Amino acid sequence: MRAVLLLDERILADGRHVKTWASAEGDRVRIADEGTPGAVMSIAALDRVMCHFGKPLEPGVGVDGESLALGDRTLRRLRFHAAVDATGRDYLVWERPGEEPLVVLATTVTGALRYLALSLSQETVG
Image (cartoon, rainbow, N blue to C red; front, side, top):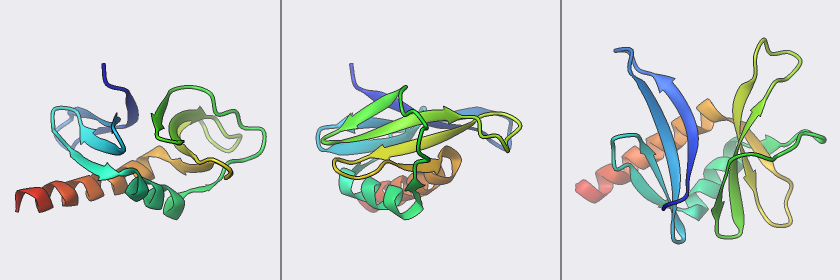
């Protein structure tokens, strides 16, 4: 069985619900909407996206829960209910050895990863 992590869920204009998943494939990661092959990218590309959008995780916020091991790094999904939010939100946490964890709102970074995956899949077709 392949290790997978749910990144985000969204509702399309036609009302369908779509989930976006990340899966480990050796030293690479596949980003795919359910029902599509998606695209494989390097862990370094994922690192660049997470470092671009990520902010340091607030001290005291626990990072347990669903995770995907990617070499010496970990991508984790975190449900957090900040005092200013009416309900909890989903975040992705990027853990790197010797570095503080970075956190990004899941919808924000998943959109960027889907765009990158789409671009990569079109390069391999074209």
